[in-house]
Length: 231
Ligand SMILES: [Zn+2]
Image (tube, rainbow, N blue to C red):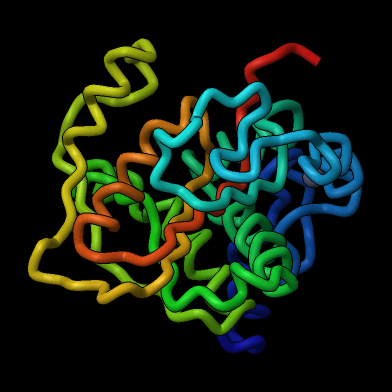
């Protein structure tokens, strides 16, 4: 958006930190204090599986994802940020997208990906929220890396909210995803984004669907990730 327009918007709709709600400059997405606290949840330097991105992974050859990058452990300020992204503010999505974009940009393999897409949201949910949080992240990554964002590769039927399901039900519930089979990715390497990876079954199912329409490598980029073992 145009800077002047942002400034005008800022007067009528003051920009706030999505984590602590303090007022922030119109060109910021998180306040300095919260940025500092977020450092405690960074996944850098942690011993995570390269493919599925989890600690204590059991992915073996079961995953369709070649590589996962995540920014924060789903906890503390990072968790608050994700909750705000599912509620009222896109700011944490901009923050995550920018940071992931920088990470991808400096990675030899991921920076050469051909396209970026997002884990889809059902139409009903998108209508009620007004935006799709994974898409906010994907578009921000695209802006930083210059890798084009592609919409409508994957879709989701309206179904039960994942949150209320147990692990087994979640695995089955991912069947509500489907790929646009009129599209052919002809071996292109794709980055798929989401705000949080919990069991990993959702993003893995989406990766498999992308492979079904001839994606080459599929990489996962996630704002946050839940860990299996207690720290
Ligand atoms: Zn803050």
